[in-house]
Image 1 (cartoon, rainbow, N blue to C red):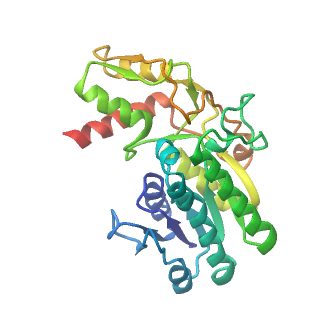
Image 2: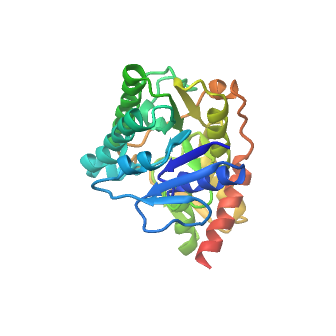
Length: 302
């Protein structure tokens, strides 16, 4: 079975990828900034934030696949710390690719970018060929990382596929909308969220994302293709709030401040025909996924 290395193996997406690929029989290695991994059963390398040891990692072992699930995924942070966000999301990608170019040329590289590269789309659904116009430093740095991937694909022949996740959620995610709602509802029966509730997202459960990436490993040509990672369904934040209220049997209510947060896009829905053509179909419904998330959250705070 193929040997895969997951960069950012201890993050939300990375940790789920480790579990998934171990379960389906891959030999798995991972690396991150933590002293020790969250689970056993795979090779783990600790790297330094200021001087990651990519040379050593890609010299010690030959990998069939590398999934880049590392970097910062915090939009507000990127707006206050753009240099650090650039280093985490763009510069580190270049460093990885350059070591692969020199030490492990046959390693196929899956780069996890972001739908933030689209910004506020002028037309829905958003296709992979839609214009890119980020509205946050995070989005710009993810777009730059994609350009670095194209550089190493076109000039140096590194085999690359790019994934643009939309709104990924699921157990283990301790930030963003669902975590924010759960934390607020833990201490109050009536809470307030940013925006007017008409903002929309295309949510994809983490278990569907891991399967989508598996499909790319098995079926992508690795010729620089870009794939939206989403459910293909547009959900307003107001609709998401109603799911929460129903799960709490009407004992909790959610309101909106009408304040638009800088860097946040307004409306998203992905065109997922390209990844569907490779064999991917989303399985987890939003209602089921939110119910699972609430159950996971309640286990954390007991």
